[in-house]
Length: 276
Image (tube, rainbow, N blue to C red; front, top):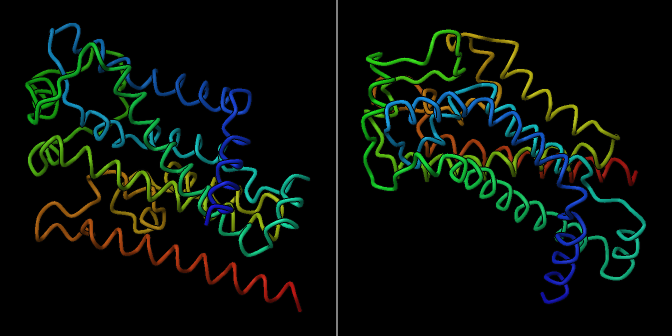
């Protein structure tokens, strides 16, 4: 166990360097700031504040979801790690333990990425943020159309009263954090499994999920939109009442876990085929 912990620590130190993370962080922050600026300006104009679950509202934007996921694809694009140091690790601890270490690294890196993305957004909103468990006045007014963004400003979000009506701010916040963490693991898993056998195939498939979310459909009534798990980050596609006809949160988590299982089966089968 100590050997595995030591190897995972080495992998984290090796991958989470300032030089490697800087382009990813610049990409994430530049584009998220563009999406967040209208909200900040509106709060400053009316001298109002947002709850911490403003993060949830941002994920109703297909573009914001794409930016968050593409940042993680960049982070995991070199999985599985195959530099000369990795071959030395395989000789030292064995192939099976090395695979376990890579999966543990994937889970920890996904947790760090999800925490970082949410905290960085909250820090940006900090001057206009409140931490009480109520929605305040600004978001409900936006959802009901009593106020709007300045003319010519497109917030690119689809703020409706569903989130405000069926969720408390804290519940919405922790739900988006959980889903973000699970989706990041799924994206990393897709990259790991398919990159293991065909160079950059996993990166291509992961980017394909984003393309499905962004370009194949623009309307929620199209069934093909739900082929992308990224849809599940938008609360408008999670069951909010008994007859909404959407997947509930437990059903979504179950499907994500089943996708983990499917990726594991694909990895095992592909390894057996390669040995033959």
